[in-house]
Image (spheres, rainbow, N blue to C red):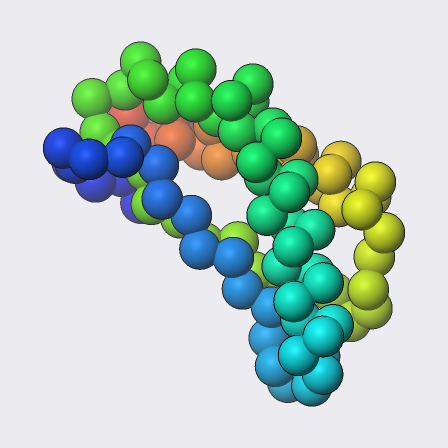
Length: 96
């Protein structure tokens, strides 16, 4: 969802469902891993693209797996998700 903004150009929401992970410790672990994977890759994969746009970006990432995955796998999947987000945002701006 593209939005016009004066403040930060990118806002992200990370979510892990309580139904799949009833223990808060597991939800927090997954959110920490997601947050770190996003933090390390946002400057390289997302920000250069967003800075060229006239609108900001607000999006949510929800963990849909049923098991706790290791950080390396999550890091790779976050890169895939950010590239996909970049491509879909580009298509929206080009009205494709």
